[in-house]
Image (cartoon, rainbow over all chains, first blue to last red; front, side):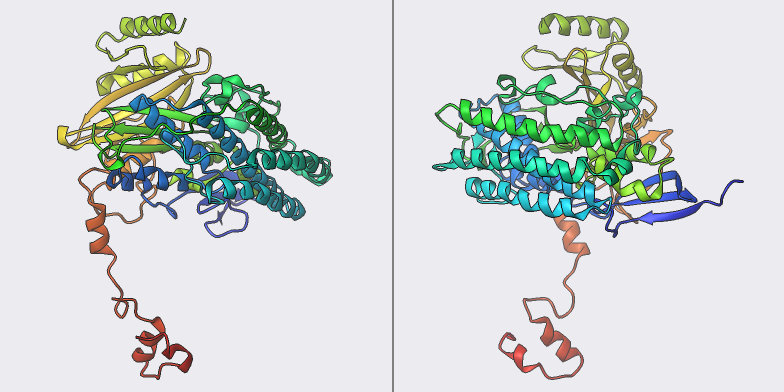
Amino acid sequence: MREKATTLYLGPQHPGITGNMMVRLKVEGDTIVKATTEVGYLHRAFEKLQERRNWLQAFTLLCRFCVPEPDPVEESYARAVELLEGREVPERAKYIRVLMLELARMGAYMLWYGGQNGSLGLYTMGQWSVGDRNYILDLFEELTGGRVYHMYIWPGGVRRDLPEGFADKVLRTMDYFEKRLKDYDDLMFDNTIFQKRTQGIGIVPKEKAVEWGVVGPILRGCGIKSDIRIDDPYEVYDKLDFVVPTHEGGDIWSRALVRREEVRQSIRIIRQVIEKMPSGEIYNKIPNPHKWALPKGDAYARTEAVRGEVGMYIVSDGSTHPRRTHFRGAAYVHAITLLEKVLVGANVADVSAIMNSLGTCPPEIER
Amino acid sequence: MMKELKEHIIRRVKANFTEAEENNDFTYDRLDFTVKKEVVPSLLLFLKEEMGFKHLSHASCVDWLEEGELELVFILWSPKDKIKVFVRTRLDRDNPVMDNMDNIWPQLHTYEREFREMFGVQFTGLEAPDEFILEDWQGPPPFRRDFDTAAYAEKTFWHRPGREDAQDVRETIANRDGEDIPDFAKKYSR
């Protein structure tokens, strides 16, 4: 006998939601038969406000699209501007940018460790990983002056060079994380509760994944090897040796295994960056920002972030201010069209875990 | 190798869509085609199914106010050939109508909803609630260039009575209720 459907509202205020959005769920018993993402709680018109700022002022606002990992947004904007203008970036600056991006990736994954486990009621992991994230934020603070938002990667290079002894601190931090990740394995991946709650849950079908716009670790968790750092290399990723992990299955567990390995690959990349980083300039100085006009045209630069492809599309009409800046975040696809499909047939108790696993980030939907 | 690949794609597109204007100088890692709006769905489908551009990387809408046009831009990526293609079209700004294309990539549904709300582009056949991000919005599409955000904010978000300046809120409440300002608050009152 068919049960009567009930409507549940998950969010916008709910401990299991991943930000300012709501998922309207139609459930029969515990099973979801329809899910609809509702947004509208967060729009700040960042892209519209860019029209009133010059090309340099714009980047201070853009990094605020994403709290956990603002650096890929800065980088994609800086590179889009450089593409449009044809501005060269010093080699050392490119290495420092990669260092920043990989530290940001590790920091964001520390938050993911907490979020993913917290969504299953396993709170200890979050206490550990969010605490450990502070060691990365300490590095950011020393290098850029800011812990969360850095405004450090800007058009032409980076804002300042590495302080004295900074490279050693980074390496010591990496030593710490290498040891610490073993504790994470014991607590999370060897945990029967985590395994049972994630295996076979929130499956993204491999054959539909590319067409549905799935990117990043979610795509790699379907067994498809895809990473912008390899496929469409930027900065100096083509000079670094690292592996793109994949796992078949398409469920939360597979995506967690991919992310587990990616943290280790980030450590590997950071060590190489420190070793190979050349000396030299860090900034190809831009003209007076108030008179700095970009040539007419457009450019799109994309970066591999923890949630997948983030990109910046910029349009110039030849003036000192952007005609249009349009941010592309992975959650624009993952949190709406993908989430609405994946949630059908899922259990109500798994919604938060699935949302965390898909990298749902409402600020990427409403910029 | 990349040059040959680009020439091959351009040849195939031009053979099937003779009116497609190409703007490719071979210095960028991308191809660029401009077509009439009626051709966009067929060209996108052709690029996806025949030429391997399976991934819709991004779509955007740009307001060219001075030219009386809105531009739609679709950025596709070929995972096989590792190349981007830009597909562009222009719409009449006064009557921007376009075919719904969410049957090609489901995620276009979200883009279309946003362009409808923020730029006023109407997508024929788009089945979605009118409201996406905005609520009870009565004004013009707010992402158009002629929408003045500063003027709108001035008109809509007025200062609350009693808060015209940096007045202490405790003083306002005390005055409203005919009470004395608490001693601890007096030193902050102006």
